[in-house]
Image 1 (spheres, rainbow, N blue to C red):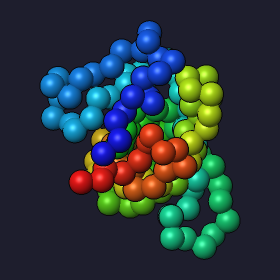
Image 2 (cartoon, rainbow, N blue to C red; image 1 turned 135 degrees about the horizontal axis):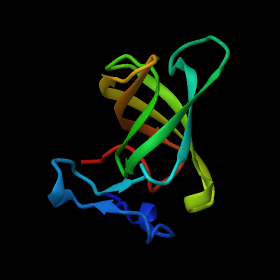
Image 3 (cartoon, rainbow, N blue to C red; image 1 turned 180 degrees about the horizontal axis):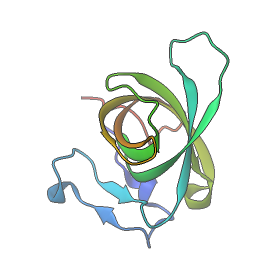
Image 4 (cartoon, helix red, strand yellow; image 1 turned 180 degrees about the vertical axis):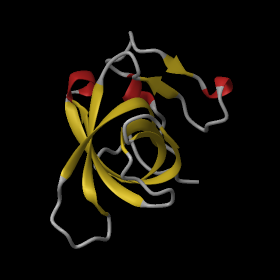
Length: 130
């Protein structure tokens, strides 16, 4: 199993939540105080419609998943494609396919959502391999 070490390089000033501090399997990098954009490719992963993009913001990120906020376009259990703009933190953008595992409404048609990665264009960010 790969580690989340790639997420930490270049982010020494970004808080990291350890696994011991949560019920998650991997450390999380807190991005709530440092805006990081994510773009939802607004089609289901298996859909045939042309891609449209919807802006989201990453709140935290780990090797196996992310928490973000954005328009209430997600369905729990649905698979979606995202582009994560990690250029300012790690010098790259990453495309992921993620499955939404929880969603909480916010005001004005927005929501918080948690997702686990199913596929990733970066070898250090992706689905768990048991």
